[in-house]
Length: 259
Figure 1: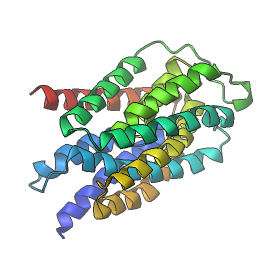
Figure 2 (figure 1 turned 135 degrees about the vertical axis):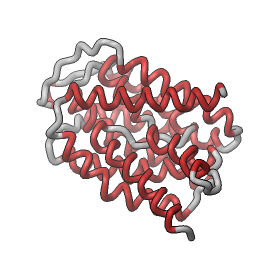
Figure 3 (figure 1 turned 180 degrees about the vertical axis):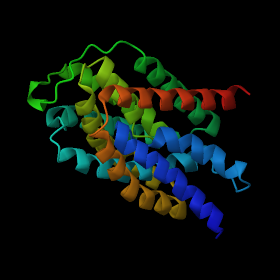
Figure 4 (figure 1 turned 180 degrees about the horizontal axis):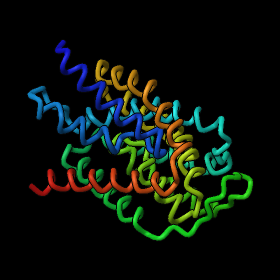
């Protein structure tokens, strides 16, 4: 096995997991396009969209778990929000992951591109929620949260994501959850969601063992580091980092689809 290929996959996993822990996403919004485009650009065999979504699902599971554990110690996880959205998004992602096994790569890429575009637009909408740090003071519309989580889970399961890159914008813009609480709770929701999507991918037969193990190793190291840094960074900076990542991904994936 080529050492350069191993280092490339580890680097992709490390970058995605570090950002995952820092801004409360599962890392798939970074890993999906990088796994799709970087290996063939370096002369290695390309992964199919189904393989990339399966590998991403495993990475998201471990990255979100490690990030969640770090944030849990700080008391930023909103348990009620996690329960309502987590169960709903897990059901949606399980159904979506089964559906994706019968879809062509072009459709999976299009679903991902549309999802990322919606997330990008939402990040630039005004956010009027408070920036409270006390979880007990934060309330939300339960029916709206459950409904949105179900839809997010369904489409996110199709692309092997846990939906965190759109869950955070939804929390900030629609549910008015404070930034740091949204990031911490999103990681917990993402972990629950990834159980459904990972199970679906494993049963679908598209899982590649070696790349998945490499990304898990990277996740165990990088995600806690990103989560620890997040606690020290201004919330506005975190929002702009997430917005920049989503926009960059949107541009890249749409260029590949259109050209």
